[in-house]
Image (tube, rainbow, N blue to C red; front, side):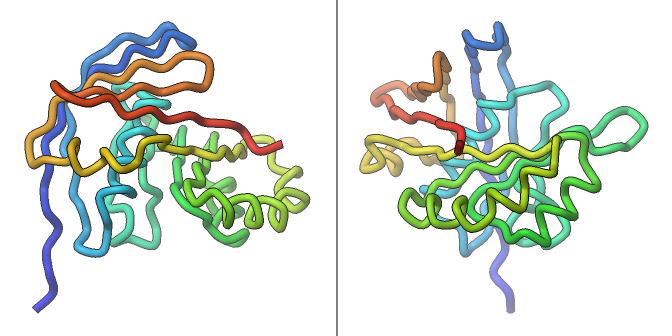
Length: 178
């Protein structure tokens, strides 16, 4: 019998100073049995960086046809497609053909640079594609943040991200690949 996803409830307050976006989001995340706490936290940060009332978590890891996050227009078109990790070129081409905007957040530092070097020349043709390196600086605290019921505050300014719960602060940063 296959293992089922674990459901997490998240109250996330996003204060994105760069975008002048200040909203609270009540979110439900399904964590696939193969997903670890680190990847789940990167999904939460990716949501915060792109926060929008219509942005949704998808089936993610358990679905080959969906990204980690996406946002649809009222007419059903995909406005935003957000992936984590290092998707292959074929998947990215497909995403660029389906969505108005495609974003990838690589969180594996060393292999992320290699991935980008191999991919960058072939993706310059896509006007709707961007990729960035996402790094949690104090990742030893991640397990302190993961709970079935979470209340987190996220502040974003100048490529820096601070995610706080009632006790700790996670510091992260994002930098676009050049």
